[in-house]
Length: 189
Image (cartoon, rainbow, N blue to C red; front, side, top):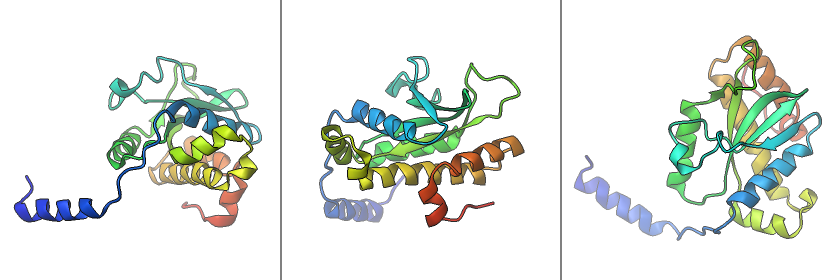
């Protein structure tokens, strides 16, 4: 229960926040843009999730909420949840859900396969709107940076969550896919 002072501070803080600039209808185009980006990475194939893997809002907190599955050598190596929501509460819920269920095993995987990381990719809806008009990634460096940063940040978080040796090896292979990462950041061990 919050006290009166906390409520007052919260109201003052919320008054300083500019109104949310939500761009409606960007969910599916955001998924398409992110998938197209991952198709540009060497050795990666990617597909949209099946209806069973992503059943929408009713799935949050129950199932992995997957929008896409990435493959290397015909084996699943990561899953993506993609969002373009400007609402902090929605993004916060998705981040918590990602932390609580960071590793996924798909039915198509064998028991010998390592669990794969579940990654949350946030992209700005306005950037997606611009991308739908001209789908040349070289003209959308901000969008590319958002995708790369989310990808690498999520993988680094997965490394910090004490993965097994096979999972750690998989994450390190995935991090090597994004050359910008190797120049900008250093990985945790």
